[in-house]
Length: 309
Image (cartoon, rainbow, N blue to C red):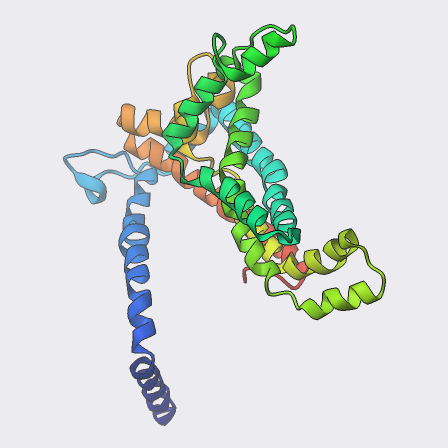
């Protein structure tokens, strides 16, 4: 046993000495996750304590699941869950397939100049900040001089207060996000498409397959493992609706549809200084997302050979 352990240690040391450059490259990434992701996890115990600043995290008394019960019994609990899950599923159903379709479309373009033009146009919105994007939304959907309402008036309609109507919030949020991210998200699918063996297309052409049939029976199966992995990861963020964009689009008139878990944590934790209560809500959100990730990964593994683990 001792000899086997010594052999393993020597192999491990030789591997490090041989590939020390690769280990140095990955070291900053490991340090980032350790410092900013793992070490702060000790603060999760605030969810089970009544935080008293002068006593600190370790000195504060335990209260068990009191904060979770308070959140579950609150009158806004179901509104937060409904809005958060609603936006998450909306993004998944509408937003997930569009980068795939865009990648398949770009991959079929034969004119290099036009292909580069399409890629530039679709990638560019990704580099806009959230503040700039939301500012553009307010300009475009302004009820007085916004482009969308001007077109409605031109065709005999009446102006709509898009940014204050709860019924329009989710659609504006999701479709503006699709417009901003679809080009950037399509890059990974284009990379996967580039790995497909050209001989498969040649064989399909010989069999008389049309371009659409080759997309359906060659390209899609070729990138299916990538699609499944990204689908699993996105399902794991169903409750992880981002805070910044929702907060910037949120106002008192659309609160019925825009109030999500992230904005409630901000109001309770930052504005209300209820650090223990907001930590409990954040922990609840993370646990649910993790359970969804495990469940989707399980079914993906059962139905196909592709899964995260």
